[in-house]
Image (cartoon, rainbow over all chains, first blue to last red; front, side, top):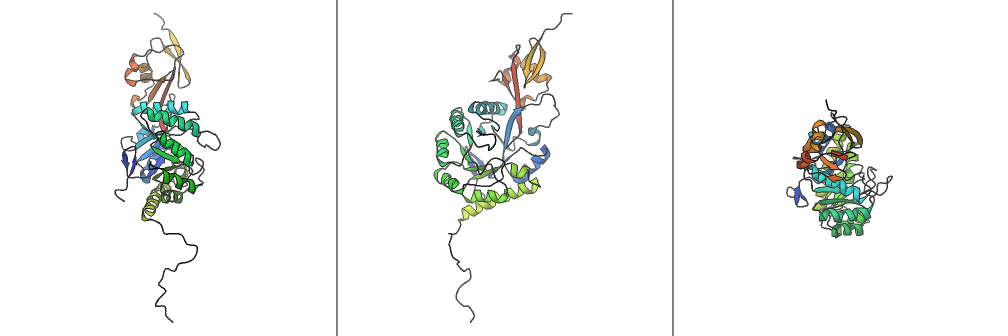
Length: 258
Length: 72
């Protein structure tokens, strides 16, 4: 397992768990949960600086971008233009090229608008961005994203923040079979075992925010997700047994006392 | 004493009165913005942070100053 690293846009990472930094009670809680999760990549949002309350704590004061890879996202963007503007600004903050593209299409279910997403992926890739793309669990669209220059395919498990877990294992497996790009389940996980399932399906990693941040005990859940991802990956690499409809005794049938 | 003429600009959606010949770098300084942690847009055009001391603001200019916050 030591050499089993995930490679995203030519960069190697030990942890296959990416975590979000939103929805925590406060910055110290967020920083501690991230540390416990072992994540090396964290998603961050781009927002206006609060010019009236300058005492508001800054994310960078709690999570050092030199030690943890920041993955700027486009959360809240509903058009390609908004997403491009956001990521170009993110790059300007300090040279961030590895980004998470997320163009939403519906305010209630938060499903991605794949037409806008595809358009944005193409433009961003041409501008030199390394784009990790939040998308639907649609194999055809995943292929198109790959052909447009995506650096990672990140299908949803279920609607963002829903905690429902993977709804369409078959599609995830088909996407796994067709792509060599990093495949990361993004959004909709509810508990640690959901991450294990994702990893057992052959995904390269998972991205989790709400399930950790809103757990009753975020620190314990961060640790649970860390272990779940490792466990699922080990299980996938170990190779599961075939499924049988009937029983198959584990003890020898010979030498039974009579 | 000559009265300093003021112009109105918008910073992150809020109106602000600033003196004439006010530069973006003056704004950053006055607002105590940590330049390394932000990106700046002037009328939807991203500014090169090294050049903001050369850019004089005009009436009705719209400035956006953004940074990273927690997000999923």
